[in-house]
Length: 438
Figure 1 (cartoon, rainbow, N blue to C red):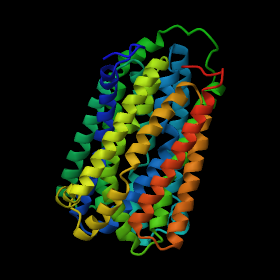
Figure 2 (cartoon, helix red, strand yellow; figure 1 turned 90 degrees about the vertical axis):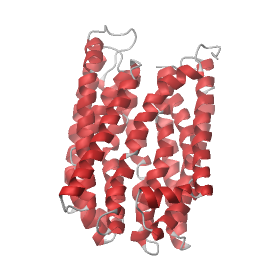
Figure 3 (cartoon, helix red, strand yellow; figure 1 turned 135 degrees about the vertical axis):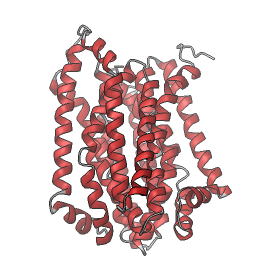
Figure 4 (cartoon, rainbow, N blue to C red; figure 1 turned 45 degrees about the vertical axis):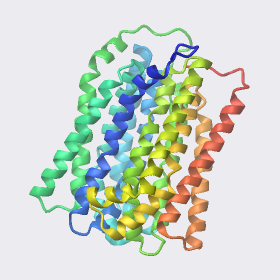
């Protein structure tokens, strides 16, 4: 069935599913790593260390994450491509420098053990893994930049193949290192992650060459030219939004460090988070889908219905898994979690059922706001979200909530607060005469 604006559910699905598969493949990285970690010595410490390593590495990576949205929205001609490429390279250098300064100086101990109060054995286990991931952010930045160009050209299917190469690489590498070395689980996971991202980045770089060649030859579009100042004005609100948003997991980690048996609580949250992320991933690509396909009010209505379907479907899946106890089977039989970890992970999973719903509806609104270049409102929403998270985490610690309750409830409340601000921002902006599509 085709909408009045010519955008059908089938058209959206064809554009969406390669991106969704790409996110799902990325989401499989954590289960692969956790499966290895759970079958090695000190699984609780290494699972907690893996959570800390990934939380902080992804936060350091945050300035380059939105290069995908930036290139999807702005990479329209050869001049813009040249300007954005220069900007991307600078960003890659800065995030690599920041990662190195953090992990190879006393700043690491000051933040991890001092500010976050993570136990020494967990912090020590996470540090070698973070060192291995020094060039992780740069590789992801270049990959996401080129992926945005491919998305703008409608070439979403090849992105899925790229991420498939990534999951094959991480699975193979993790298995071979597990069998042939006596390295710790976190070190094996970090090596597998770094190599897999490098392989995927190389794949995307190669397959994007024809598209990049065509883009270089495009004449400048009519209208105001893109300058470095305008580019930064567009991208940095997105970056600031992502940086603030990704503080969520370090904050949760700091909260879990203050509950009873913090290592067990953090390990359980990491196991639950691997499966929660697979559900959340189905909504993460919706902003790019909305940016690329939103042309008029009819197409917006079709995209809204599609996003709501994703939201309801992912939440329903989590409810079914938790109510039937199938999530316990995944934790224990597939990921190899011990029963004490599985019990806590099950509680986290059940209490987090609303998380993928909130992610999907937020992603739709973020896509609409970005399509209209209204990126500052996203920063406001995330600021409210993180403030809410800190408030609930502090409340949970003071009231001696268990780790699973603290983590799940604080994240759900934070996402609900962010959605409320985003929805209000969009409703208010609809009355503005300055709305414009990219």
